[in-house]
Image (cartoon, rainbow, N blue to C red; front, side, top):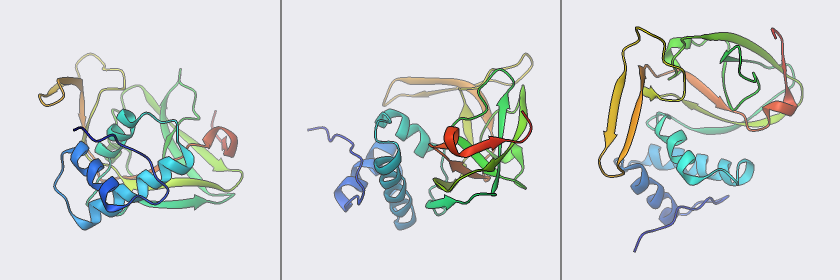
Length: 182
């Protein structure tokens, strides 16, 4: 029988074990804590997020480092890298001072956007892992990586990126951030 992944404000061991299994990673206390924190955050702030997207988000987190639900305060500065044609108010940000090449994204065609937090809001803080950025535009001349996950028959095509940088998942960005360099 296949287990269905669920979100929970207080995920128990069984729920966390199901997520560990879905991620196909080695079980370890710090990873379990990070998954528990993320699943709780998704439950409270992103309850309509498809679990397939949550899996993708978790795969791009370095679960060997802490994952923490925090509150950003008015006046805090966050940074994002966006294409000029994209709405600058999206889901992922970082704090100023982190190297953009360590954020697990293809920087080609992106510009730095700086934002000020206008009112207190929750965010999920984690570190990125190296990832195949399959969501950004691939520019001519960039090396492309193809990854076939045989268990799921999913193919990713994108640019291999470095990780290690701090990321902030901010589901309420559109109503709590002001872009300082539109």
